Amino acid sequence: MSQPGRPHRTQGPQLWTHDFTIITLGSLISMVGNTMVGFAISLLVLDYTQSTFLYMLFNAAAQLPMLVCPILAGPYLDRMSRKKVIYTLDFGSAGLYLLLFWLLHRGWFSYPLLLFFSLVVGAVNSVYMVAYDSLYPNLIPPGCQGRAYAVSSMLWPIAAMSAPLAALLYELLGSAAPLFALNAALFFIAACFEVRIRHQETHISAAPAAGMRAALQGFRQDLAEGIGYLRGEKGLLIITAYFTLMGFVAGTDQLALPYFRNHAARFAAWPMAAATLYAVLSNCNTAGRFAGGLIQYKLRIPREKKFAIALAVYTTLCFLDGTVLFLPVPLMAVCYFAIGILGVTSYTIRAAATQAYVPDAKRARFNGVFLMCTSLGSVCGSLVVGALAERFAERGIVFCLQLSMLVVIYLLIYRGRAEVSAIYNRDV
Image (tube, rainbow, N blue to C red; front, top):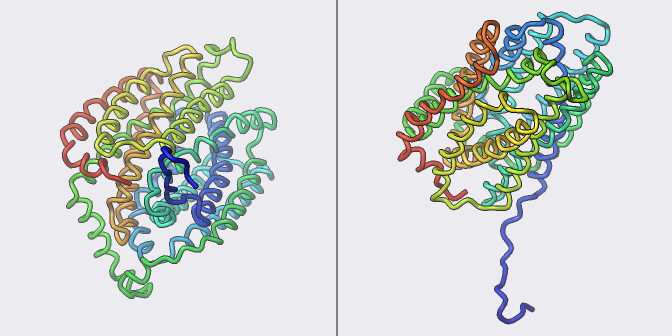
């Protein structure tokens, strides 16, 4: 019985349902393995090639399939079981990493082999991301979208905390092979979780009845539909264009590890290897992302303020990302923490708004086009930044490109504020 004078608190919708818990745990487990392997293999490629450009080329290879695979996969994922695609790809990834562990353990290492592996992993990840982004909103209880994407934004920060451990193990063992075996095991466990998702996928029955042959025949029409839908939605088009250019400039983020590796003498006063110090500092970004996720989970941003907050976040990130490598280590830690908080805020507002705005029947096709465009920006950015780094100082490149985004923000986001705010300022 409630006490007089005390307001009755109604219980909101429950977020942690069976399916949401499973997709969250499965994602976290696979992210931990990918974080450790990704950091270790980056060090391996840098040490083996001694070239920033070849290191950036390796990173770009993982993104190349995203130019094609998402747009090819989108139409089929609007007709197929996205759940089955997700756990099948995770089982396949487990086998792929186990094979690479065996090859590296036997001492059969080459840069072309790792480049090919990067392409294959990029293809798998690009299809997985479209399937995951399209299934995930359907596993969120109504009224919980904002909190759900806040949880999603905290998964990577939690997983990223394993990066210093990966750097330490690599320095101690001198090999990335054991981390590949661990990643294979983690992918297998994640897939076992995902098999247990109960959600009944209604989009399959809602789609036109078609076998694989008919789906192939209708591919061009579906592709034109996905692009046509984006072109007909000016707000989504502006958002896609902005994040494509941001992906280009985000190539400068990959210069941080080479900067620490190539200028280790600047960090000689710290009692650890320069690469390990960078891993520790990147965890400040991780902590900021986790804190930002908690804030987004606990606080509900007023609908009418979401666009204004996103615009302020985009602008502030340009200054922070552009200057962080010029700062002393303690201030770097503070800056990375702030970047983490703002990055999560940006992701949560954009992801929750766009995924709620796009109809379920078209979501995979939109996500495919969006991922293709942003990946094109990332690939081009990685290659251009890598080439520049062969001739110019890393910090100068980062500063100039990050600050150039201020012009992009004005031309796209600010001038298109009427259309973008109509998408961002939504109750989700």
